[in-house]
Image (cartoon, rainbow, N blue to C red; front, side, top):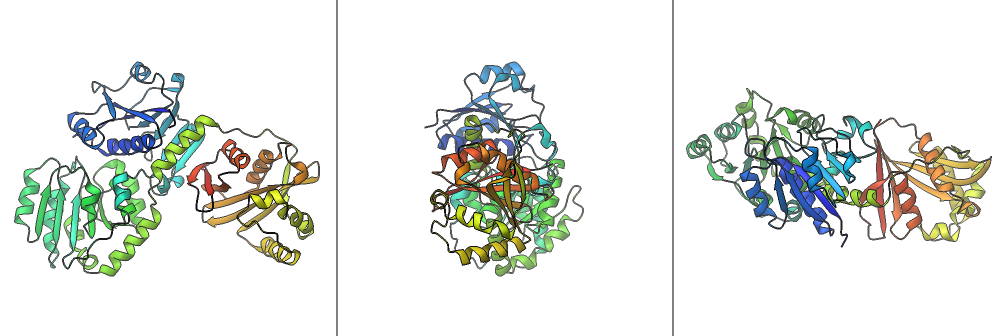
Length: 494
């Protein structure tokens, strides 16, 4: 048990929507699963409070009077708290004087504020991250998407194929443009028979009327406690471009998206441009009916639906909440530390460094902390070095202090915007504090323009190496694999 405490702040209601609350509940559950105590604080109306009680009856809720929370309100609730996690577009006072670590969810330009940890979980948000200078630590992109436990439970559930395509229509709790009823009615343009499930928490008359007059089989449900379990039985979701997008992606449920609010526009375009969903348009939705009709070809192609499902699951792994809470835990134990300027420099390795690199590689301590623990022969090493020096996706560096080699660092490109670092300190240079300066020098040579994610694979038992990258600002990225290696990462956003 960690014994840590987190206060999570969000606002939710029939008018403002439940997206922030659902995301907050998910992060709270992830924290409690790791031994934290958690409570929620904010302007949450009766409907939101009822949802919270049904989904997590043990989670404590403190509500404001609807006028917004003051610094005094936060101070009253933050006593003994280790982390304050903010997930709100509304103005929040400066909380830096209260003492807890401040974690902040931002959504493009919405909800941006000073924080110890800033999180934007939108697709490709590393390219559009607003005001990264307002935090020293960042979680960016779809890897930070907050995906509920209920969703992950459905990720690998197999469904029975149906002869009749099954469509889920869910626009969230607000649906300000009345899109739900229009979508249901527009499906009359699809000639083949469909089974449609509509989620309409407000039970609006126009939705019921559209369902009753549809040429398809339509069932209308109110608020459901386990939407993922219902969604799992469908072939396509027609949904607003909000937080549920990443739930459905994690499950591998193909989607057609409707932008229903201004704060969804950026995310809507990113998802559509990436080819992860079909776009059904933005307000005022003049072409919505026509676009719904174009879904007929997709619904008649099980192969296309299966290919899309596999790609969605590959992109969204569902570990966003784990990354957030694990980052809190690391930052509470180890704050990033900028290595002081030193005489240590990094230069490109050459073929003449081969003998020294060979001896360092076969050192017993180095092999103990490597994925490949066996000794290598000179010929294999020589061939590896030649290939490495010619590889455009590898940067092999020698780290020198006062003209003498003291370490080596290597960068390997893993994707367009990701590079993995590895470091070996010379046996005779260990214990001199060289490693931190070596990593700093190696990072300064990586000329790839932002955004770029720097990744380090470290064995969970290698305490010194974990501490090194923690102090260098690398946050938890992946839990330990079957060989005991975990991944740490940090974004260079600007």
